[in-house]
Length: 252
Length: 252
Image (cartoon, rainbow over all chains, first blue to last red):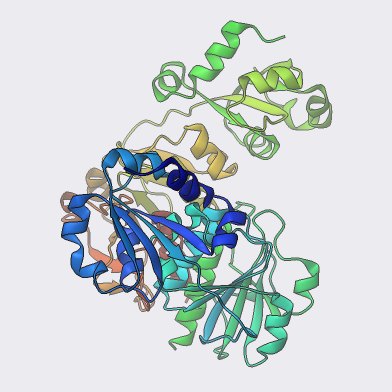
C-alpha cells in the first residue's frame, strides 16, 4: 500500500521545480522502463506489479542501490500520470552535466526555444535513431524530464544526453563544426549540399523560428526545398528531414 | 446571440457520425479559415467576430451561398472546441469523392490504419509541403475531418484531397506506380535508391506497421537507415523522411 505522502511526492515530480529540487524524474511503462534499466542512468526506485517484477528480474537486479516496491494495479493508478496506468513506474536520477559542453558527434542537433514537450521528446528519439549522442537545448526549451517528453522519446532519453546550454557559446566553443540554422528561406538547399564535415544543425521555436541573435552566429541558413504550398513543417518533422539529409550527405 | 440548438448542432460535428450525416466539418482559427476560404472548398457558414469580418471581407465575400454570422467572443467560446477560442469558426462541406481513385502525382503517399488524428493531419501538411495533391487512407484510418486533424494540417486540408479507399485495390488499379511499403527492416535503403519513376509510398499503423495482407501486394519494402538504437520513428516522421528521400531522388 502506497502512502499518501508517497503519492504526493511522486505526483509533485510532474512539476519541473520539484524535479530540479529532488533531481528525480518519472518514467512509466514497460518499454521506457526497460530502456532506462539497461542504460547507465541511475534508478532510485521501482514501483511495479508482482508480475512485472518476476518477469523482469534479470533487467533490474544488476542495478545497485535501487529500491524496489511491489504495488497493486490500484496503487499504480494512484501514482500514474497516464490515463491507462502502466505496470511499472520508475523514479530516475536526473544526470548532472557540468563543464563546457563539447560536441561529440560529426552531425549534431541543437534546438532553440522548443516549447512543446512532445516535440522535444520526438527530437530525442530522432537523435537516437541517427546515432547522435547529444541534443543541445537553449535554457528556455521545454524540460527533457517532463513526463510528456519522456513518453514521446520512447526510451531514447536513456541514450541521448540532453544538454541545456547557451547556444551562442556552444557555437563559439565548437568552431570545428560549421553551423546551419534551419529557416524557411534558407540559403542552402538541403537536397544539394556539398560534403562539408562536422555540422551542428539548429532548429528554432515552433512559431517564431530561430532568434535573430542566434542567426547572426551561424555559418549559414538551410532550407528543406518546398514543392507545394504548406507554409511550414512541424519543428520535429523539419529536424528529422534535415538530419536525414545531413547524414545522407555524409555517406557520399 | 447563438441559440442553444446551434451550439448543440456545431458541437455534434466533433463526432464523425454527425459529420457524415450532415457532410460538414468544423474549421477554427484565422490561419485555417484563411486557407479554406481561398480554396475551392465549399463553405456553408462563417461564425466570426465583427473585427475578423471587417478585416477579411475580401477573402470571404467572393464565396457564394455562404451564411455569415457576426458573433461575440463569448459566443465563439461556446461553440469552440479549443481551450483558447479563436476569432473565426467555419462550417465547411466535406468534399464528396466518387469513382475509382486514380493517383495524380509522380510520388504519392498512402497510409494504412493510422489512428491518431494529429499524425494524420501532420501527414496532410507533409503532402502539401511536397506538392502532393492526394493522400490515400485505408478506411480504418482516423477521420480527416476530425477537428484535431484539421488543426494539425494547419490549413493544408484545403489543398490535399484525402481519399479513403481500399489500398489493395488502389495498388491494383495504378500499376504505373511502383509501391514501397515502409518497414523497419525494408529491403531498400532510402538513401540509396535507383531513380525509378512514379512511386506510391505506404506507411502503416503507429504500433503494428503495415498488415501482411497489404505487404503481399507491394513491389518492395523500404527502410530509413538507422545509425543508433531507437526502435522506431513516429509514423509521420517516417512519412516525411521517406517522401523527402523519394523527392530528392527524383531530382537527380
